[in-house]
Length: 129
Image (cartoon, rainbow, N blue to C red):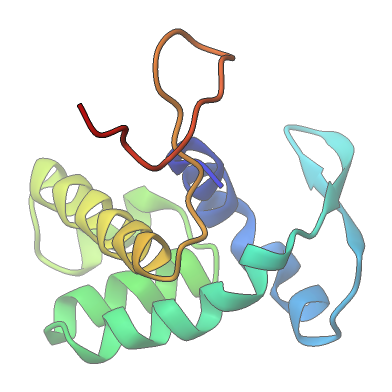
């Protein structure tokens, strides 16, 4: 898993969370007026647990952002206007939520690291000199 995959997954989580509960292999969603088939990868099943963990450790406003934006799929504009935050603070907090979830995936060893140029996978274990 890469951070970009997690960011894309957060955007569609509200639409595919029922498929995660049913342990489906794939699900079809509508994204940008097109039918898209999303293959559910093993790391995606851990997301609800990590989201719950981050939600429990944060204040009420962050829990509201998690519940309304990530779990229910509401638009950013309606949320940041109703939670009494400036737009920049809302987006900063939302980015921090994704970063915390990504760090939990790092701890769970589900993150693929890439060294060097794009597309060249190398060992995660650094060499001794």
